[in-house]
Picture 1: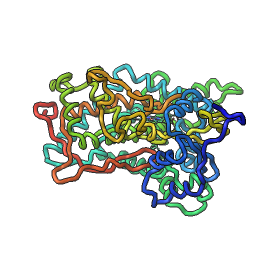
Picture 2 (picture 1 turned 45 degrees about the horizontal axis):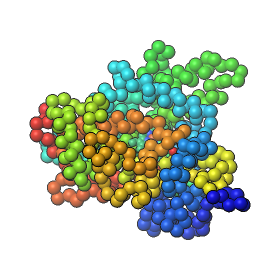
Picture 3 (picture 1 turned 30 degrees about the vertical axis):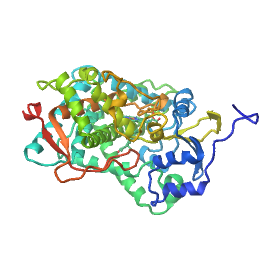
Picture 4 (picture 1 turned 90 degrees about the vertical axis):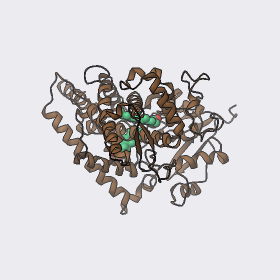
Length: 488
Ligand code: HEM
Ligand code: PLO
């Protein structure tokens, strides 16, 4: 279908109106919703200018898969932005770092370290279940005292302790000041990093006093002190014979590169500098905490809005697991309705509705459109997950759409579904996140029924857009289920 003049550029938006609607506080919609609406006027794939950068917005699954899978390597670049450079010491991490040998190497180390936790006495399953146990104990205590609880800090601590075990072989108790500090700095980073802020579009704005940038720098410096402390502790009692966690794996790789220090391959040149190590572990720690916690909060928000879904999961749990033992990973296959609910939560409220921007590493194309080297590509997962041609009634929360017609097995009813991305840049934590979501939700729902406290209104389903899409804060009443483990 290509014209004789060769591939054409995608439809282009006039620059000023978009900048205006994207950035003005008067805009009623967050960017992913706005980008979805712009399809009406410009088609499913269109381009616009953000400051001096050309950006293509992709709103359909065929083009999204071309970018992520078919031409994955061509589109594996990441843009540098003012805020992510502050967070990652100029892209020395995995998520915001550009495509390079260093990036590949770090992904491999992390992947290996995460796999190592599959087996053994410190298996991921045992770590998660220990945290689920302590989370349920807090809920029981609150229930016994007749208190409604903001679940957010409790869920965050449970999830943090899982990644903390994986990264640093340590955990936090309730009220630990280091944990409270982490909660605070991490929210500050989520609120300020990589959200189409003015400075990322007009970098010269950095020269003016800027409240967001100031907050970001402050939060990053608190985070860096925490990471440095963990790193120093690990260096002090490192041993070649035991690998306790991800940080040990990184220190080992660094040491072995230093020992083989031939003329060409030094630890610096393969990207094993102290900065790189800290930024990689900072990514996994940050991603590990904020993503999974956010999904758990969305799941609970929807379960409160749809008590019939909650009841359905509980009936499934009662009949397949019963009340005498706790759920375990091997129950996953026999709890399809719970799995379907998790899939539906990830569809209707994707954690990263615009993924992380990709960059074309050479001149290429998307469909029939020409794409120049250096062009930024934003995959609008929100459009894919709310596409009316692919999903019946996309705004409706309906776990049943992920079940076969008998309701006994799982399906994915549309190819327009990519909650973890795909291809070279696919999420590194997908398997871990799915284990956590399954275990935390099954443990909670086996023991409690969740609702808003009497007299409170239902929490908003709108969410707050940032580098992750977070639900608003609200209080939950956890009612112990009769005869369940929660009573003991
Ligand atoms: C990247 C989703 C949990 C680590 C991503 C991306 C998405 C995503 C959409 C971007 C893909 C792209 O830009 O094309 C999710 C969801 C999660 C989750 C929905 C929870 C349900 C986690 C966890 C970890 C993690 C628990 C850590 C163990 C990462 C990393 C990247 C990433 C390191 C960057 C990969 C790269 O750029 O090469 N994730 N994630 N994620 N995720 Fe996750
Ligand atoms: C979350 C706040 C932390 O303090 C720092 C951090 C590191 C990695 C980021 C994460 C934040 C947000 C979610 C991100 C993750 C890397 C991959 C993940 C962007 C900013 C997703 C969903 O793409």
